[in-house]
Image (cartoon, rainbow, N blue to C red):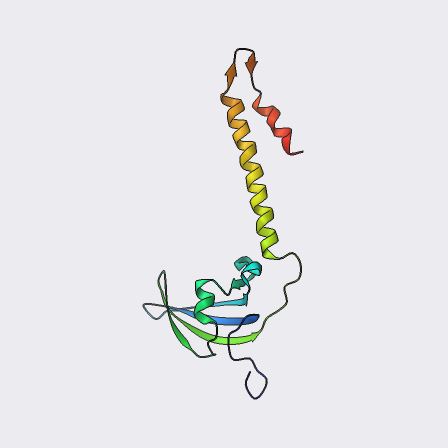
Length: 136
């Protein structure tokens, strides 16, 4: 914080605006909150402090230009730093676990349907449409 109480250093829980600068000097503005990895969700503007971009800006001050090689980006300039907003609700780790479980369930159902549609036995074939009711 400076003498006026304004935040000017990037840290965990701060909201940051940066300019991404490419090799030609073109800039693109990006903003995010720096959070622990368990809360990271870029779709909601929450960047993990352990991500490469998070590591690059952590501890730096407003106005700093930092070398950063990612894709066509060559530098990052920190435009502003402010207090982060608390993220209420289910944390990102729980949401990721739920999405992963749904993907696993969908994969199991697809595997069963593929087996049922390709299997032919001497007592009859499986009905792949009968597998659709498994998720109910």
